[in-house]
Amino acid sequence: MLIMKRILGLIVANALWRGRLNRAGFYISLGLFYLFGLLVLPLQIVQTVAAAREATLLLVVSDALLLAVGVAMAWFMLGAVIRRLHDRGKRGLWLFLFFGPHAGRSSP
Image 1 (cartoon, one colour):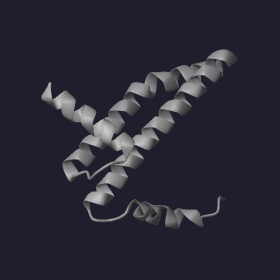
Image 2 (tube, rainbow, N blue to C red; image 1 turned 90 degrees about the vertical axis):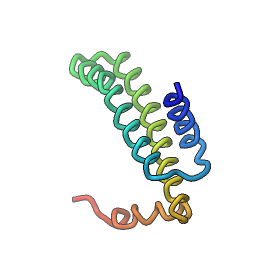
Image 3 (cartoon, rainbow, N blue to C red; image 1 turned 135 degrees about the vertical axis):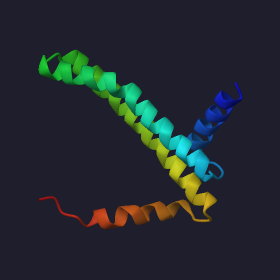
């Protein structure tokens, strides 16, 4: 029960981007991110089958669900990374440093 409360508190804190996050909490957040990705895998399979069978309604619904889940997962991990940067004494704007090498890249 205590573990579930801690995980729920971690999820809420990451979603609100508040406070600091130690290394162990960051690794737990990363594990939750991958676990949730595995739970979304059946929805991705449904989307692939719907595209192959040209089931447009099912494809639209699965696209909308995957978009919502993707935004939620990105928000969660962005919050975890920013909280980890705060724990290291850095501002969240340091995250843009990781996008720097990719910003000027042209597509082939």
